[in-house]
Image (cartoon, rainbow, N blue to C red; front, side, top):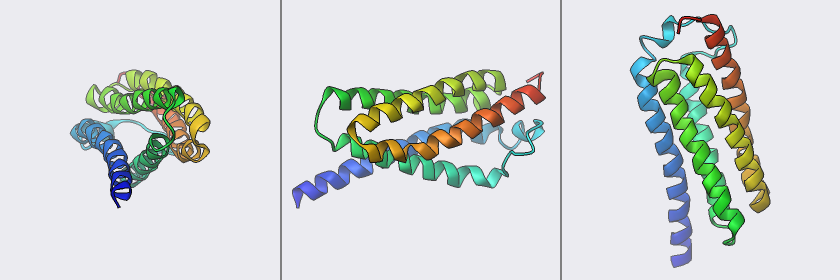
Length: 162
């Protein structure tokens, strides 16, 4: 029973860490999503605002599951490096919200999100060495961020003064 409890706590911690990152990023977003963001010219492919919260909650859930699969694997230098890359990309995820929404800078947001995209890819490759399932759980996140790169680019391109 104690082993099950320990594993359950690990899983909850991984999920909480990722959801917390989403909440921190959301603090930057909530400040400008009602006044600054609506004034921007956006791509015709830009989803309606209500789509973003459920998508991000789901993506952070998948990231938490992936982190858990890596954490519960056998201790190794690969596991430590995978965790380092994971937390690097998670930090850049928060930094994107700060750059794009907090600083109201599509240009800086674009620079950060391109780094984020690369960090996600590296994280997936590191995870793959440890858990193929963990790497696959990160794929929807990579795909969404790929789409977000396009959306960020379009906002940057269509709003030259921002």
